[in-house]
Length: 334
Length: 269
Image (cartoon, rainbow over all chains, first blue to last red; front, side):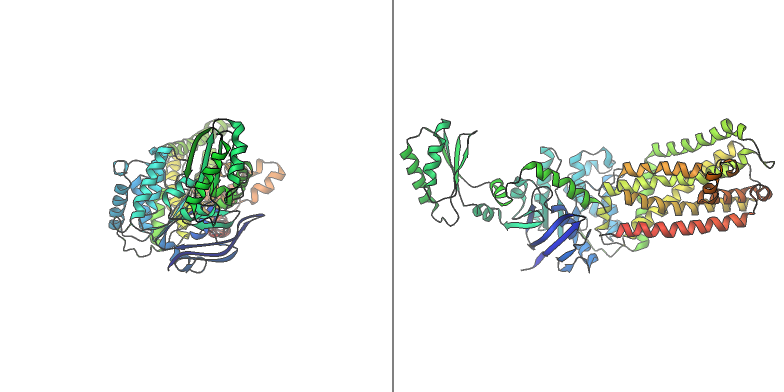
């Protein structure tokens, strides 16, 4: 099993703020791994460490087999980086941007030109290739930025929140572009705060919070961590909710969650509950016993949101937002 | 990406990457026509203001027209105003993530800085040529040999190298465009509290002490001494060699200190 990224006990502090707090993370080659976490969890700091833009204070970090501190150049040769901001020159054309990056990677002028053309085609930017980037839309800029990280045919592509700040249409567009890359077998590490993005693009997800790895696995594995299928019962009358919840609580499962607003009781099959079908049937029987007027019954896969909230301790949004400011300003100073 | 992109890349060396990045900075300068027009207009209007509005009041000294005194000063101050743009350019690149991209690539990262200095020097040569042209148009005359005049021009370009390093460091340390712009206040103070526009002797004592000993004065006087020929000694008290050697020491000192600061900041991980 070849490891593309091997991080052990990474610690990085910016003044008093600890951005990485003993982070362990492994990425096997041939995988698309999403690092998922709330703002301020340490995602960007981790990507910057992998990209050799900063060195961890403690711990070991190897990328494509090379230590980032001792052999940064070998790492840099193997990676492509597309950051949160579209890091392209606004006063140059799309083509010039790509050619500059290719030349700086050591390609000859002719090859750089050919590769720029190929990338422009791949991202559907050929018609706008010779316009100044400052006339591009946000989505086009982001695509060009992604393209610039690919002119060197990197073994590992680092995407730091690739779609943050994009409108929904550009977001779908960029997802398609990333899909195309994945089909060609580039290893990808992407960070995101969007669960649907991780679910859509990644074969593996690593959830981090407060600078540590909280959980990792395939989306399906993570979903099963909070207990397999989710059983939802909707009622017409809000007053019936406690009765339904009590009925479901008797069965072997997780604690039922009551949502007053949607008049719904949901319960996940508990961990280690192998026979989901039997569990469901038992659940249905005990609801029948309550004689409540039901609106709907459904069974679904747990969403990553539920996994995420369960694993990151359901921290309130405000606190998370405040952390973000701190971590970003520290992480972004060169 | 194996299907779309072919790569047989070697490593871009320091010279190649310096050249590539200098080309990028120069290219983007030429594309920002409004910036070129603005900096030429600014330079010209300062010169016209002093020449025709304040010039009469300032008068002449040692049998020398104010225009002959002031144009070398304007050109020296122009070096600072022109290279000031580098602070903003660097800050833009930091803020926009462009520097991050460059630093994550396998070429000698010092090329980002040397490329900037190289491009700045070329751009400065262009802008100073225009300024000098305007200087001649408003009545400035060379009182020394053409060679001496060319030496003065070359000296200004050397000052430019030093100040380019200063403003690269400023751009890197501030890291955002707004703070980098704030530094222009300092440039105003340093150029006005010098011999660039008026003789230091007319300033109050406390200011004189500062003005006499700061690099812009030494630099302006060096350029003056090289262009005024025989008038220089009478006006300035020393001959050209005295000022030129001192200005070169300042230039070297500033370059060493700020190149070290900027590089250290740039390399910080």
